Image (cartoon, one colour):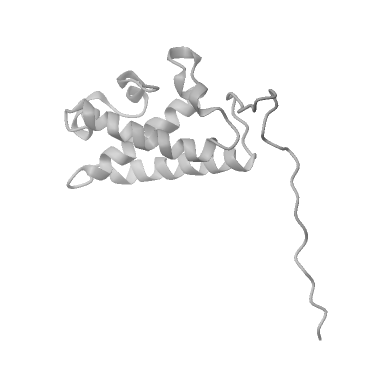
Length: 139
């Protein structure tokens, strides 16, 4: 997988992490899969998701790793009966989603592999189009 258990030590303590995943690694893996698919939904139109998630170790984008950890922890905490630590996880999850929306809109440009078509061209266009709001001159 893209994440390993050591990646979580930056965002949460070891004892709290064991408690949140309910001592079952399968729970963590399910939450990671959910978070990866959710993240891919934001990044897929412009970035090569398969290439990004295939990277391991130091070749990964560390901000992406942190964001994915926050999203997976949010899903893990949601499964707990009393939702212990839910407030901080919700704040960090919302911040992760805001970052992904910024990437999707092009306001934030992370160092990630761009998606290319058969011709080797990136499918993402930097041209934005649209018009002004229509005026209504009825008095």
